[in-house]
Length: 270
View 1 (cartoon, rainbow, N blue to C red):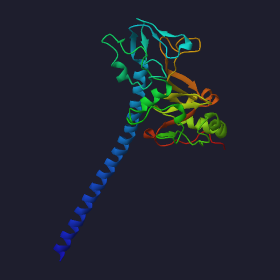
View 2 (view 1 turned 120 degrees about the vertical axis):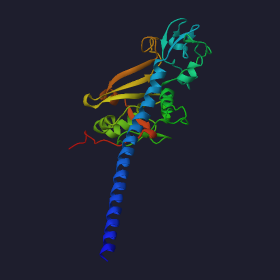
View 3 (view 1 turned 135 degrees about the vertical axis):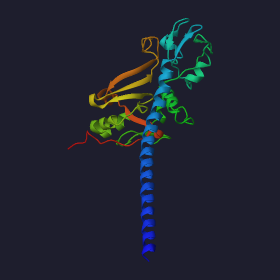
View 4 (view 1 turned 90 degrees about the vertical axis):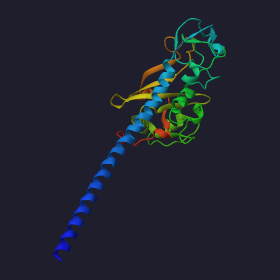
């Protein structure tokens, strides 16, 4: 009897050791998986940012003069001059870096159609998000309101309009919208939509301490017929304050594949 009890006690102790060992292994892998998921989200966001950065910085030179898509601005991409970033257009706008490079020779000279291929603000952001969702269609700003397709809001504001962002900003107020800006991360976007047009910018960095964000945006040319940057229709790492965004009715949005854990609302009233 005593020997049997001893064997039984040893078996129980061994089983207990095995159970504890298995528990520790599972717990360890659980933590690793959590870290992996967090890292995965960062990697997804990096893919989005890197894709739009490539679009915004690709160098090219026109083989011949190319007239800007909207002739009223009087702008021409001039033969032999070096430009940076896929050119702006609202006609043949579904252009990725990969597609654009197909029309560049070994010296970076554009050899494609005179009615050139390019992108606009919303198609470039759409293209960036296609780095994580290849099936995402090329959206326009009127299809970028939270709840439309794969687009979701960043923050806790109420979506009170699917036509005008000014109504959303007005109905929610500064504290709520600023708190939403605080929650932006690289790969998210800020979008404004007015009566017949709109604009969207991809976020590449957020400085919540100083209440500002850094964005990349495809802009086209200014009203005076000059490019918004030196030989480029893009603005890269442009700094914008929360107040500038608020005053021009920008709401924070993202692709649902980039959704992450929310952070506390530090603008909540006492």
